Image (cartoon, rainbow, N blue to C red; front, side):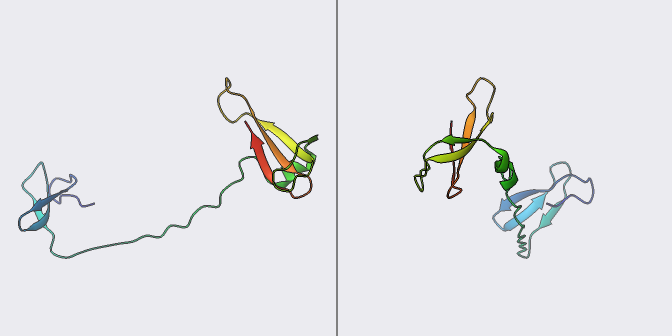
Length: 106
């Protein structure tokens, strides 16, 4: 982003028959583009937080009889969370006792 040196407004890119130029809409300043400039920034991605908590949250959860879709074990830990608005039903999260696979029911 370039700014006009006379009035300080943002310069706008105008394609012309001679090439590209930046021009100011409030004063007659024109900056002709003569070289190619490129800049690439690589940003480090943030670590994704576990929405329903880490492994320590599952330690004190009650068990129920629910079949794991991965290993078909008959017991699972469960917890209930309200993720959407209050007039929507809450979501029940399950974690298999045997293989620690997680799934949920809305």
